[in-house]
Image (cartoon, rainbow, N blue to C red):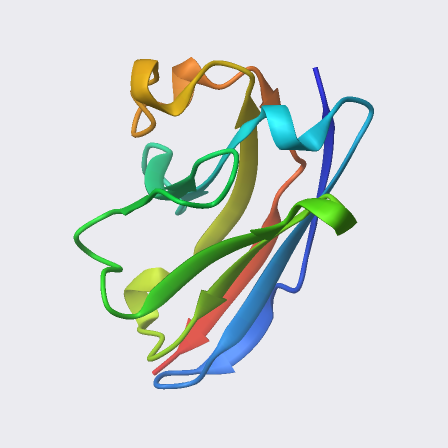
Length: 127
């Protein structure tokens, strides 16, 4: 497994932007599919975005397409989530996740398929 630490959460007004980061350590970062999930109070953890080893493939939840962008810097073993045009319904704890299996064989929208998780960072969007 790889150790993950999220940062960058906070309080922002609707329409604003935040950039989350997920720093990885412990294993070869480039071998891992990386993803962001989020969980709002009283709701199940849901998929936000995922990115392949080399960054050439990315997928997004319909609710964030066109507003959020996932990226990774393998040299710095860090993944990012740029969040623009934030809405109150984006309020949640955001978690980064990693898995060592190839992107093509992994159902990235399912949280149970990821074997490493960070502790989460709170994002609150006020109306």
